[in-house]
Image (cartoon, rainbow, N blue to C red; front, side, top):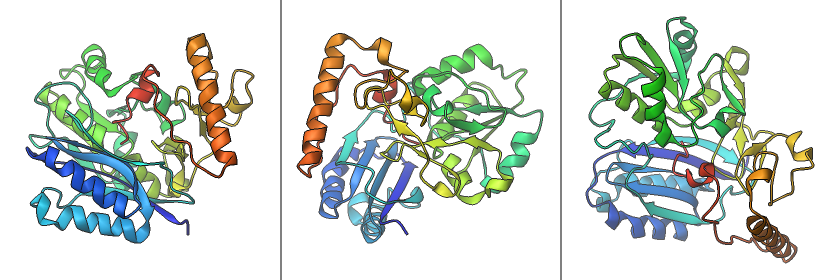
Length: 322
C-alpha cells in the first residue's frame, strides 16, 4: 500500500464565521504535516489534502467533531486514494467568495439540487438515449478522459458554464440532463443552477468521477481515458491508480507520453499547448524557475517558489479541484 492518503473533500453549509476557521485549520494541518489546499467560504469548504493515514483520520475527527466548528462540517463528503509520495508541496487554507466559482449570485445546493445517482446506477442513466450528458469540467480535463457520448462545453473555467447553458440548452426541449465532474462539487452546483433556470429533470453523479472509478470495474465502465486531478499525480485511472500523464508546469495542461516527446516541450518552460502563447519575458522567467528547481533538487531540497500571476486561465482556476 502506498504511504500517503489523499482525501478530496467538500461540504456545502452556511458558515458566517468562516474567516475564524482559517488559522485553526491551518495550524492543525501543519502540526500533523498534512499538505494541500482547502478553500473556505460562507457557502462551505472544498479542497484536497494528503498526509499519513493516521494524520488524515485525525483531521476528519478534528474538523467534524471539534466544538470550535459547532457541527458545521458533520457528514463531510470525501473521497480517498493513495500516493507513493505526498502530491503537494505545502499547506494552504484560502478564504474565497465561493468554494467553487460559478459567479452567479444566489445559486446554492442548500436551496435545491439535482437528483444524486450512485456510481452503480450511472451507466443505465447515461445509456438512455433521452439523456443529455454534460461534462461540467474544463477543456483541458475533458481532453484526457470523459464518459462516452458526453458533451464538452469547451470551458476554460467554471464561470463560463452558465453561458454555455444559455446558448446550447433549453428547458423547454432538453428534458433530461445528467452531469458529472471530478469529485461531485461542480456538478452539484451546476444542477442547482439548471433548476433555477427552469430545467426539471436534472441528475448528477454522486461522488463524481473519482467515486465511479473507485467502485465500477473497468470491464463494466463507460469511462474512456484518465481523470485529471489537481495534484502532482496529474491523472488517475480505474481503481484510482496513478495515470500516465505528466503536466506542463508553465500552463498546467496535462501531457501524454507522446506530447512529452514534442520539440515544443521544454520541462518547466513550455509545451505544445502554450509554446506560442508565452512572451519572451515569461519564457525567460520560467527557464530561471526551472533552473532553481533543478538546483534545489541537486541539494536534496524542494523548491516551492512563487506562482506567476499571468499564467493561463486553467492555472488560475485551481479552486475547481473537484
